[in-house]
Structure formats: C-alpha cells, structure tokens
Amino acid sequence: MRTALLQLTSSDDPAENLVAIQQALAEAATEGAGFVCTPEVSNCVSQSRTHQKEVLRQETEDPTLAGLRAAAAQHGLWLSIGSLALKTDDPDERFANRSFLIDPTGEIAARYDKVHMFDVTVSETETYRESAGYRPGDRAVLAETPFGRIGLTICYDLRFPYFYRRLTQAGADILLIPSAFSPVTGAAHWEPLLRARAIETGAYVLATAQTGVHAVSRGTPRTTYGHSLAVSPWGEVLADAGTAPGMVLVDLDLAQVEDARRRIPSLTHDREIWGPDV
Image 1: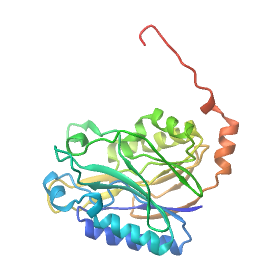
Image 2: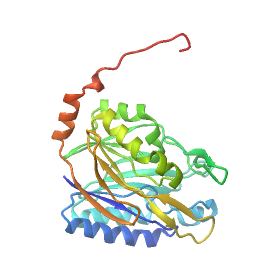
Image 3: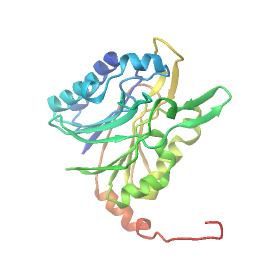
C-alpha cells in the first residue's frame, strides 16, 4: 500500500487548515497513495482554551471531520486523521484529542481518544498540562483494513512501550503515532523512540508530525519539531520529512512484518518476573 505522510504547520483556524489538508489529499491521490496520514490536532493548534472554546465543535458538528470524510470518499482513500481537537459533553468542559480512521467511502472505520496526557515540564520556560484542557481516553483501538491491522495511538503515547506491545500482540501490523512534538524533546527522543517501538514490535511505525511555528490569533504561539518518519519493522527509517510542511511517500509491504517477527520472535517470549518490591 502506497502511503502518504502529510506534514503540516496547522494554525488555530480550523477552516484554513481544512483547505490545506484537502489540497494535500488531492496531491497524495495523484501520487498514487491509497492511504494518507495527517498529524495530531490537524484542525487547530492552539494553547488558548478561550480560543478553542470558540472554534472547536463536537464530533457530530465538526466541519473538519465532515470535509475530510468527503475528501476521502472523493479520492477513494483510506485516511488517518491523526487527531482532531473536539468539544465533549464532559461537565468540566475538557476537550477530546481524537484520532479517526476513515475508509474510502468516507465512513468512520475507527476512532481513538488519546490515553496518555502530556503533563510535563520540559524546561523552565516550556511547560505543558494537556490534562487541564483534554480528558484522556481509556482504551486501545485496533482497526482492520484490507492492507493490514492498524494500532491507533497519539504523540505522548509513544513513551509507553507496553501500549504498543499490547496492540501488536493483539494483531497490529502498522502503528500510527501522529504527533505535535516539542522541538526540545523531539531533537533528543523522537527518532530513537520511534525506531525502538518498531524494533520492539516488528511493526511499521508511521509518525506524522506538525512542524514549525504555528500562527495563532490569540495566546502563545507554539513551535513543533517536524520530522515525520516512516520506520520499517526492522527499525530502518524509510522516510523523513525534515522540517518543512509537505508530503513523503512510502510503500508498505506486510511481508516485512512477518520477516521481522520470524527473525526476532520476542512478542511470544514474555515471562512474568516478580521481585521483592513488586
């Protein structure tokens, strides 16, 4: 399956971002892609809760989701919407960070809410409390497609290897990790962690990323790392999008998944280990 990874510099304007993604989907289709992936929060990159409350919508009313479902159907594509920031009915008014897998008829084949929240202090000047604005999901999601079984994850999930082991032991051949990574942690950890997840699981890792300085109408601008990566089941980097917005293409061959797991069958070698403090 020819796959396109779309690297974006989304703004805090969902309508503007939708147009950019629709144009990219048309380009990917002309390049022969049958599966296209977008990054985390493709519809709106914003650190202003006030702005988000004004522009975000619930899933059933979200114009980005509706527009991208229509585009997937128009071009006959499988589409991973890395994630959308969406309103919920939660009493505390926290949003959902929700990924969607869309089939070539435009139907929603799977949805996944980000489980692990990015609550970290990267430096004295860079602090994130994702759980203050977003409520976490509570379940892993595995989706069946004609070209492989796909495990849906988002960004900070990357740092929890057991999550990917569970997905692959349940049958995942392809792991999606759409992200909006910090430049500091990206430079230090992005590629090593992605390659580690591929090596540990013998699965393809497709990690689409936001990149650059994101235009905002209010609040503090955000900068993201870029470097969307496709990694083989043996841990080889097949494509790196660098730091500019754009698209990279990669051809997936599930025979490589089977070969990697035959050579190193570690997914079947788990043992319970108990120590004095466990």
